[in-house]
Image (cartoon, rainbow, N blue to C red):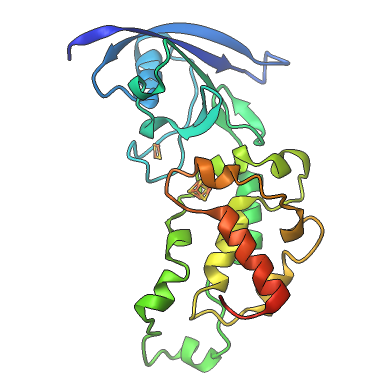
Length: 242
Ligand code: SF4
Ligand code: FES
């Protein structure tokens, strides 16, 4: 592919067995049409420095594993075109608000534990039907639309990295978990209701958000966690599914 100049990449490096703090290392990457930040990091790993660590899989904004801070904002590396950054220097760092593992890879264990704490599955009272299913749980288009956008979450953690409350309160579930709690709460097939809302009705939960809305700004899938949080507050104050 025709080379169209060069881009400087300043990449955060951190080896916990050697470094107390991280440092930046600079690499020159040939700019070609369609180059993504992930392509550039793979180029560095394959041609300049095989010790570089990062996490990725699908390369198509589906798996949620390549989240990192790119020129100051949480973004998916595979979804970020270098040309669209309009910058001769691209600075790549691990996601904020996550423990650092090595270089650009961060630890998602705490993030997934918060997600699991929201009971992200349908809870039903009809045990007999659960054990011996005889019919489908039908939904109208309108019922589906109550939660559909929240179901598009790929658990990339960008919203969590952008959240100023998650940065200061380690007990705060974070926008991803709260949006998933709303996704199941708003599902007409779910019968947990009070049990689900109770999980976040406390000072470190839903009331801790101060509506910076940075979560919704950075989400690559069009999910609006800030809206989910407001709708959960409405449900807690006034009841009802909507
Ligand atoms: S809500 Fe958006 S930014 Fe947050 S984890 Fe889900 S897909 Fe990623
Ligand atoms: S590699 Fe899967 S979302 Fe980027």
